Image 1: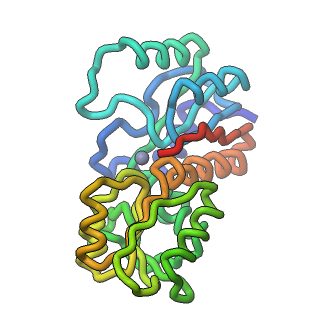
Image 2: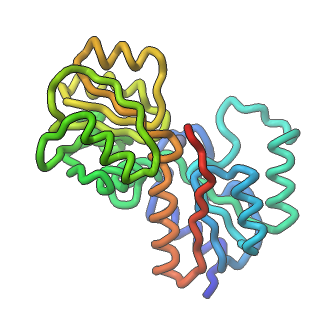
Length: 253
Ligand SMILES: [Zn+2]
């Protein structure tokens, strides 16, 4: 089965409503390739390794969470950027990227998917009162220790998280925001949550967790952001009968 590029973008824009977000990169079609789409590689980041896999598999489209053309980046097409774009253009591959809309989506977003994977029931947005809150607040069925949560995360994500103890309390309520959202720990503190989980960690995050009595978990930027693009790809396969493959290019961060 195949569909036109136009139709695919229309579907994705409708599903993810990118116009509602003020983002750091363009959402939607970033690099134009083939007009008909039948074979899609999904992944976290449009790295050269992901593109090489797409070429090897004969994909006509790459759909990712981290695309190109970030605010503030050098606009010149040189070095790494030239090589990536050359690969796409030479092989007539579309590059489609959705950033914040794919973090925030309540069904197939990175945060919703990660919460489901960790058995967290989402109860609210992390930014109280903001309908576009990227992060979420949730609850566990039963309170658990930081170490038990660490074990659950390691099993689910295939990666050992960094655990920062914020006290002796068990964890019933948790805030989460995938990726590089460690500074949103302030929101978790404001809300009086037991723990906060994001992808990355900074030196200051450790002190903030310890001094404010909130456990902090850094579960990996890449590891926490695999599930949105994957779910979106599976949806395209069901909806349009496209051939879709999620390619995980391992990244320890
Ligand atoms: Zn990210």
